[in-house]
Length: 454
Image (tube, rainbow, N blue to C red; front, side):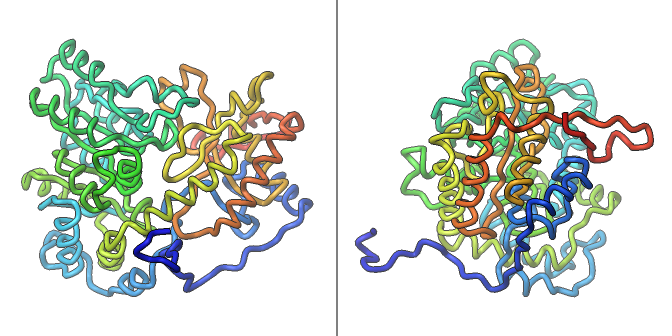
């Protein structure tokens, strides 16, 4: 206990203003729901879910201040963003906390990526990245560019405690520039807290070294900063020279290294809609703003005000992110002693290595979906395979299952129930039956998959 607060422990920096009852289903009800959903837990109705760890995007608990701000009835921006009070209020918060003078708000991170890559990525060029998120990867490839992963080899080793497995391998990056030429590389795109390898962070020291290389070769450096708060919190814990810095200082220092940023607001900023482009170039901002207007992805006034209200609350102290990181670590600690989880703990979820989970016999067909179905049947808890893996991971035979923990939504008692359910599944893993995908010509390839048990 801190001597300055002797006798008082501020362990949870919020109180619950509204709650939603959780239905206690029977195993027979859950088995029927699974059968109706063709063993795809993603399409089981929400009212039949006890704890939902399928995603932390857009499902975290907003504050009362954000709810109040979201009631704004201002008209939309149109082409005159400066005439919107909500835009101006948000612009002031963006400049204060992230240091960018120019920004474009969008409805989602995906729309921000689509616009930004269309403006900045040339057909036939190369983008250097670190196991970029699937939507980022898709938008880059849709421009006709090629992605080259230059992430460090530690990202592929799930058993070590390397604190920054999201780091760029500087030698790989330099080699790529020398082999292809700086003019052939549209940008270096760095994801913070790399989801594909377990939510692992990028160190500020590594990002600074990447910026030095980028500046020397005149290559733009962009960030996928959806999880910038998470990444910054892990920097504060794991990178010695920044332990006395505030979260706000680390965020500003991170952004100062980048020429541009895309992000979803749905992860770190406790809202259900919103995305951003940050840039230092007025011309790029004008192009992006026009494209957002043409695409119909301008953010509503209420959504902008909800984010603008949330940012000063989030940055008022480190308490929100500290509690979030600690809750994920709490669940990780509960599982790490027995279940093969990726090491070390990350900031938004716990990832299970399915190759090790089902060793020595190896994973069942559609192992992630089969384990998710088993856990749901026994507990009513929904977990998910998560976003698709990067090609280099697929080539290595990686199989992961993600337990994504929404911010400020569940208590540690819920995490105890999750740990018990997953621990039970591991102890009974020989009972878990693989799945077979149903091929149905009447269904689109984009429809959620249907399965039968083997």
